[in-house]
Image (cartoon, rainbow, N blue to C red; front, side):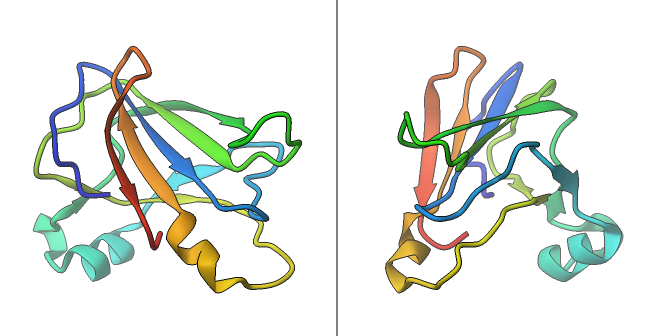
Length: 126
């Protein structure tokens, strides 16, 4: 996630998956390990990719209610998101039974302010 605008003092990161993908009954997110931070950030101890700033929880919902498929995950953060930073994290998702190319462009990642309003949104490959 490339942060293009300051969001804070608290914020949310929301990931929307295409039809057929399911985050399951429990939102399972995790920080990237050091090796991944290095590999994706290319900076070793001074990696350009940072961890989520103090995550406090995660909730799941359907992207298109009343669907029972939970394909929207919202991670709560106790610290602001800072313009110009790149954030990396893992989020467990169950893939659909078959691959559909058009789904690749239907992923979305959003940053939201404390009021839940979208600050910025990126679409495309996740």
